[in-house]
Length: 194
Ligand SMILES: CC(C)(COP(=O)(O)OP(=O)(O)OC[C@H]1O[C@@H](n2cnc3c(N)ncnc32)[C@H](O)[C@@H]1OP(=O)(O)O)[C@@H](O)C(=O)NCCC(=O)NCCS
Image 1 (cartoon, rainbow, N blue to C red):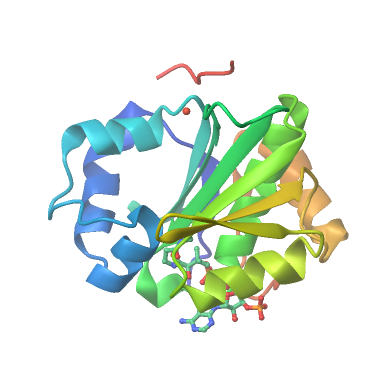
Image 2: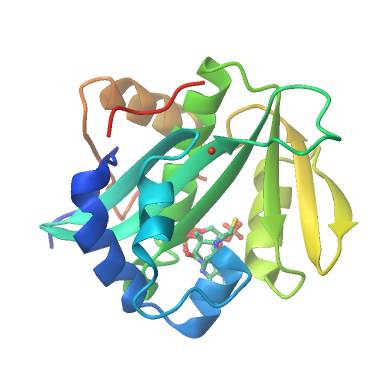
């Protein structure tokens, strides 16, 4: 089976990203967006995912988008140093194969290069798997409750797992596109031209 590949996202991906989001379960969508986004999601939301105030990537299997990751500058008034909010979503059949961590590694490296000092992950309290994933990869994470959500704040660095794999992927990305082999288990500035 062909491995997913990760490449920078752009507005030509709108239709395929819409199709991916429309095919996800309500639970995955809720964990990613913490609200009902509609099915299919609104074009404005999809466009913000593809051209954030930061950068975005999609993972593809053949012509199909199977994952999305982005970082965007956090703009709330209590942010004291450059903080990049990271978020990812992977289609259900592709989950638990390392793709989420690989995509987050690429986004993390890019955000650091853009000057981020801290990362922010906004997570639903019911999203145990993401909370565990963050705590394992960023053990210095602190968590604050923000209304009904949890804000995980960490110092900006790559996930603490398989840096060799991460380095290889990030280097490869400079060529524009990288393989995201399923067998490898790693462990809104710069607005992209859309
Ligand atoms: C969170 C998400 C992006 C992770 O992507 P993924 O490709 O499944 O993740 P990986 O395979 O890289 O695994 C990361 C960790 O999540 C765990 N995990 C992933 N899917 C899981 C599931 N269905 N049940 C339990 N654990 C799961 C993996 O076991 C791994 O755990 P570890 O930290 O003990 O190694 C993906 O599950 C997803 O899209 N979830 C819905 C949206 C969401 O919650 N986004 C996060 C908002 S910041």
